[in-house]
Amino acid sequence: MTPADAGALDVLQSAAEGLGFACHRLTFSEAGTDDVDNLYARLGTGAPNFCFAGHTDVVPPGDAGSWRSDPFGAVVADGVLYGRGAVDMKSAIAAFVEAVARFRERRGGSFDGSISLLITGDEEGKAINGTKKVLEWMAGRGETIDVCLVGEPSNPLALGDMIKIGRRGSLTGKLVVTGVQGHTAYPDLADNPLPRLIGMLSAIAGTPLDEGTAHFQPSNLQLTTIDVGNPAPNVIPERASAGFNIRFNDLHTGDSLTSWLHEQLDGVGGDYDLDIHVSGEAFLTPPGEFSELLVRAVREVTGREPELGTTGGTSDARFIKDYCPVAEFGLIGQTMHKVDERIAVSDVRALVNIYEAVLDGYFAGGA
Image 1: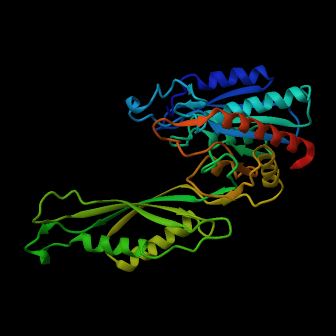
Image 2: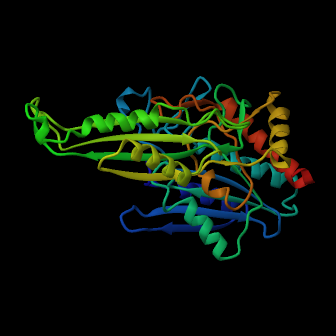
């Protein structure tokens, strides 16, 4: 479980080195955070460099007794693989490696360019000592990637449904409104923060942020908590707080939304404190050669015509987009983070075929 590696990167590194990858194990630290182990591996030294990216860390299993088998047992039953990370996203990483092995064998070990793996143990956690720092390490030594395919589970219902070419941004806010505590019978001697908090929340949550764009659904603000912590029915509280999250499209930035929030809150007035954390900005890799290559590979293997989408939460693609064009394609996400996370083995095999077709197309000049 994140950020503990439990030997997953050792297994991956061994497999990669067996294919000829030059491997770099990178452990990054930062005060107040856990150390995180990462792997960057590269097969070849020339350009272009096609990168597969993903993560070996997983979320906790929840109540392990509710699973049909050991959450970390990787049990296959009736053609279905069960286990935490089966969908999100250790199967995709295994598919990366198998696709490279087949591609390399058919090319006799020789091709023009490089294939790399950027694998972190910090995607499900704070995402501080993972992909972001690996990319900074790469830039510091002149290591570049030309395009990147992230193996996140991108398909809603069936393999081939969707390729993600962008993601919405995420802003989390905590609003604290301060007043003066007092007796409910003497409101003139107190200052109740609750009416102002209600007015502020109405101001920010009561109006749509936008109507969406060509590639993004409308931005949305969701209230996540309202807290007073007042057990006494005859006491006006001193303060009240609320939490909210905004998932925003490319009409906004974290800075523009922060300014908008302050405008709305100032319009209500009174003493307040607003703490903002932006975990990722909205981004889009415009449809073009790279997305067309991915569409062809998916169509060839599955017969489906994938949608180019931007739905879902954040991923490490939010860091990679600053370095090269990036897209996401992986397995079906219906059971990720759930009890009995699972995927059909046939889908994993099909994913290998898709990744192999992507490599064929890319190194044949298809991107």
